[in-house]
Image (cartoon, rainbow, N blue to C red; front, side):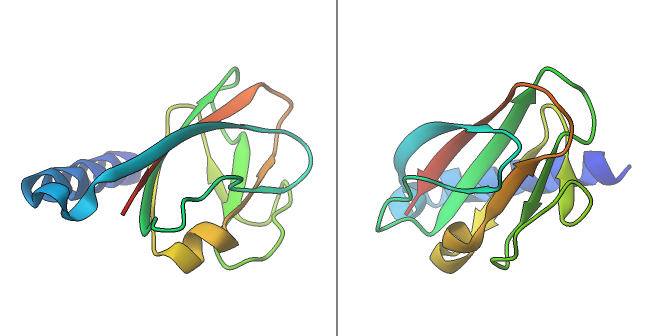
Length: 116
């Protein structure tokens, strides 16, 4: 149920963003491979205030862990994300503070779209 609510909330936020027009105009897209060492988002545009992130993985559950307060995640510390999970990150400071690490051996690719 929580996953359905998360997806519904993300869709509603995107709908609101589209309805408001260029206020949340897309800035750029990038892909990031997440492995066994914690990584930050590598190419955050200077004007970015929001990002939508979707995880694609060769494993279906519990494969990437993220933090947004600047702490270094581990396989057991942080918020777990699974294959095809989508989430948003609001605020430039949160984009900069986001860290991700692989929790299970897999090929993990994040698709990230930044907005202003």
